[in-house]
Image 1 (cartoon, rainbow, N blue to C red):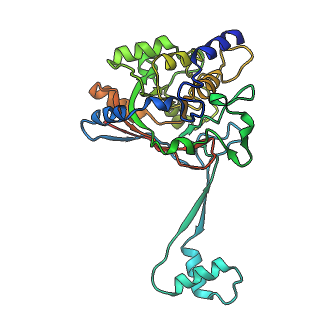
Image 2: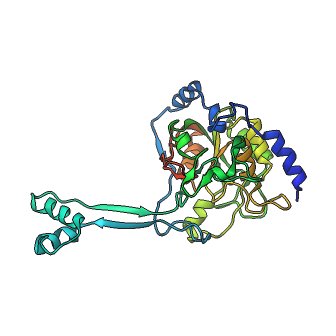
Image 3: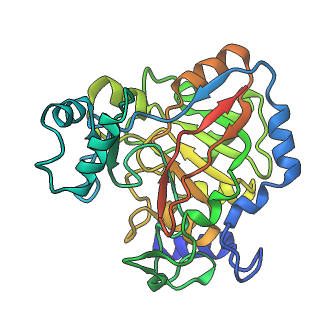
Length: 329
């Protein structure tokens, strides 16, 4: 178990505050240059598309945390509403919306259905915004933590990066295959920087500045087997933050619930990698990405690089966003 002194030494080493200016709200996404985007497009050789998002529904992985639940999907207009209004007419209705809907139904043959969803913005496949995690009253680049209020994040909201589109060269590091485990990397041995290097070496791929690195731990495949969203699995050791900094990675995502290892590795701190990446480095984290099919294709053709397109929703002031990432090979 490392100490908080070790943590603070790493934090000082990886911190990017002021690197791209005192008002920067993009963090390591600054590594994604126009040249990098062009390189990513050139990685497409066959036109194979792999959606990496999971289902947003009542059977999702949430529930382990009382403050974050699975999505609730509600129909606001359906065929039953239309039939009822046609049968009984609008004369007895006082609700302006129902009167308007009745007018649509009586004007001709067109009918429609509408729905809505109620959910935490980080209920399934998602990006953590840089305003998601902080410590000692500071967000990334020194912005004050109390700038995030009940109205949302004034600085570093997900809307500040949504305009970029977030597309770059993606690289998959398959730790399931590296370790030779049947389904997933069980809790007990966190994924180390040395393993990331070894996975890249065996796969014949090089991590370059501006890449978005995807880590396959097999956790999502395990969840589909058991439906147990509370079962922990191995994630990145907190020292992998230094690895990300050394390689100038633009962002990192994984197929598990928190990217990093559930067991901290730092005495007196929980989620130390979240603190280092989001608050100190300005590096966004993606969670609950489905990497199984992509990993199988990469193993089949020996190519672990691809164009990755993963724009968040531009929700004003949000500290996270759903995403349906697409890998194109």
